[in-house]
View 1: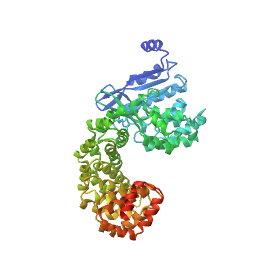
View 2: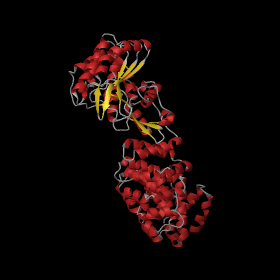
View 3: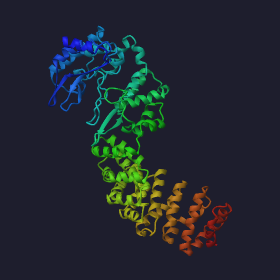
View 4: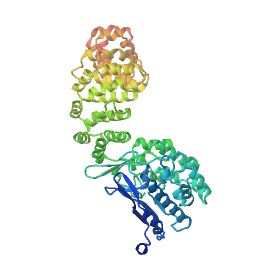
Length: 573
């Protein structure tokens, strides 16, 4: 006792205390120290300026642990000791022996485990009636979301976790002086907004990288807080909302200890979902200013993907999305390849992965092909990515198939070698099945772009491999969409197709009709296609004249389009 008095006298103005003697870990069990339970409350009452106390211990490797981390403690003696400590703290608050705003962290009611209705729990009721209101409102209730959803998710010391429901907690708060106004303030909502699950990922050099996730139960709790407080979320200060989100990255239990921006990541997907579902007054520029990493973090992103190869799906999605945002120039793509990203992407394209993983992996492949070099495309091919993409094209739903098709088109555009590899992998049948089974304009645009890419290049592709697309092209020419028409004309004009087959499917009448299209680019592409076909086979002149090509060409010329096309008119004349 005299030692405690001396310590309290020496540090009487201290504001924060961590008591690590409450818990002792032995193998997988923990034990509660009886002496700490007996003395802790009296010891804390000697510090008049105390603002925060953590009650817990350290595990076998020295990490901080709290009793609130152990949801199942099948030891009646330990549970009795914790209840005793909670009751002591409640009595001390009630008698004003503890500072009125003291935040107590690390505890939970042992009755919370495995019991669905503990509305009569006297320990939790007393805590809700006596502990500081501003902390009671943030008590973790029975059925609330639990941080620590997997081993990477960082456990923060929480406010007291009680076995009461949120309704029961709020009913007690309502009856306390100041409780009615507190329930209708914005504090509870902003607190929850700063309680996203933080995933701590450490690399070989010890550098941390933090990713924030919100789950369905998190949104449910925040929507409840909005409803109870009758908040008009749109009227919240934009700066307060952003700061609340940033607190999810806080290290330890200090909301002001925010890591470096380069170590923090909240995905655009999650940011925009927060904005849409909760109607938050935040904008994309806030995401760009506060939550986006840069190319310097490419090594971290790839390391996270390696760590999470078979782990948390949403972390994988976020990192794949961020990866695709960074792959926009040759040096960055080369750096990613040097770090081994290609085998990872191919692995994420395996059918056992979730569709959302496959979509984002396909987008990253697309970026490498669009912004990379021929050598990068060759490196991709050597991983066996083309057969995998073609295989998924046959099995995936329409949205996934569109992303995969674009990735294949970007790869085929790099060289005729890549193009022919895609054709030999039998890309055409699943591509045409996708077109036939859909009436979505976006699908028509994507498929027409892929076909146009596969029909380009010198030397020309093998006729037998692309011949199946000719009849679908005639149907695509009936579209009113400018992109579809341009792609279709490009495919027809570049490919040395059989003139008899083309006439048979009625391509020429539609080409002549497109000379009067409202888009000058479509007119130009249609004329180029006619010129290309006529230049290869003079016997097509008469069928074109029969379809009134002369009058269409006269109208075309009168519109003063590119004078370089006069050669086409002279040929037909």
